[in-house]
Image (cartoon, helix red, strand yellow):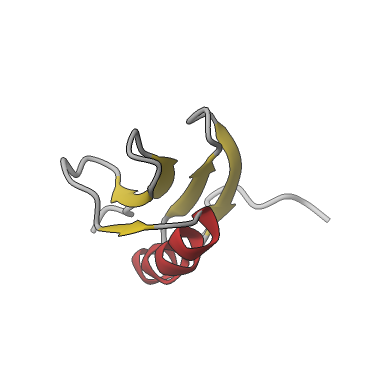
Length: 75
């Protein structure tokens, strides 16, 4: 099973959406970025994928990885 990545993005109507990579629609909509992050984190953990948080300009500002990392750092 492929890992599913989730994105928290700012929408034109001012809300924040949680969207899985490749999905055409948002999984959920929220009034604040914090609420969207709280909703997206368990989805990313369950899928063993990544959570990518976008700023108001929709550029990725933070990324969290869950699951097995194929290239863990040494040390």
